Length: 571
Image (cartoon, rainbow, N blue to C red; front, side):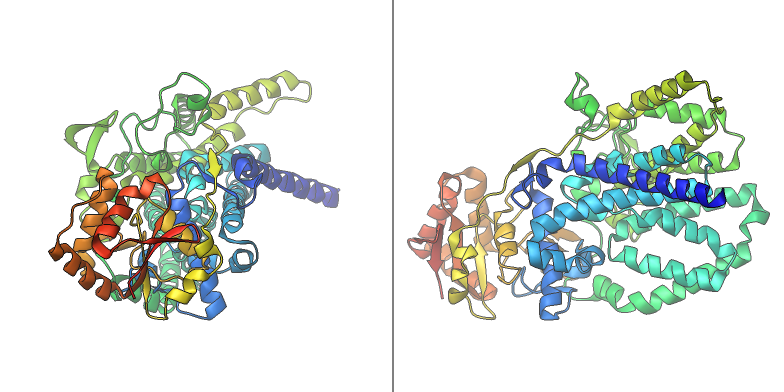
């Protein structure tokens, strides 16, 4: 009898994980239908993530230091620890990247991390929070496919990879039983999460601390505070030993910066955000609902009215339960903090400071995107949904209609906020000059390539070409985070420090007109090329880059078309 029950439970668990995997495949279906041949409708950060996967694979292939991205921002390079290089995912996946390419590796990574996030939340909820596995499965579904996770499937596998969060939370709880052993296990999880995404780890630590204090106030004897503190001390000591060098490199090494990039740290949740639907939701895509304001990938906590009302009802109904109070208050705190430094109503400033204004100048907080604090709101909503379903009265064997009604209500609450399949475009072909390796005959070991338009979120072509070389091609520019003006310790900025020649090229890109140049500009351009150690300049063919090509002709003389690209040989 016990063996049969155990087998049945394992079958249910397997079906639960298969459900999360099916959901991830459905979300990424248009990408998976043509492996490696398609990109999201706005490729931007996806191309950067593919470069980082390629970089991790290159480090394995060449046994090089993964913290030094010396193929971007020549000659200074880029601080790998100060960028989202996601080495904790890229290094283990490097065989896939080397064999099948970063496009397939990215798609596989997103599918696996989404499914794994749902699976670990299901494990936590089914083993330690609720008794009904169906309720736990729905909670895991919310945790894996809420906007704060699923919206990042387009760009950021390091943010779809939230599978360590519930495990870390549980290991903190278990410190009360085995502080030394538990502390070492927790340290291993923390180290892994550092190399997946430090921001998620920071938010996890904050949310666990707030929830833990609330639980301590209600159940002080259950916490066993001395044991927990001892375990945290073990964790801190072990992680300090392992992470001393990587974190020194991040904060004090070459090209380190202090404080986040200004536009990125301005992302926040609108006052209407929690009750609005994400731009990528079923409700917006297939109805007349207006999309919520803001960039879709950063719409954290956009649950929609039905889910917010349902969760509020659960909290009121089960308020007497200490776990419900602790989780609900923690989620509310982080939802309010995600409003940022100034409250906005439908993307318009109100002039009213948000609570986050008290924190945003503190170390670490100054690099955080306030909207991502909404991750913790999702981590509160998921267990609250599971608890609400678990506490419903169990219908007897004849009450099939009640089960059907319950399933229908759950669908009515969750489906409107569910993500829709990712929009895609065909991946542009890599020019033959790059794909064939012809570029290598023009570039010596310490020389670099200048590619225009200069790399940004919108102009991602150069990053895709660099990825196609296996991250071997050294570029003078790139899309990354570094210290503003190249001054170590200044606030973060996107891309290479701007030099005079950059301004001429950017003027052409912005105006779509050839920039007028002088002899002084030409002399300065020679100095800039010498600084970058540039051997060749590349620009795409076609009308889209005509202004940049005209500006380059005026600076360096006429280029020539080679292998599908315009080339200026300035060796």
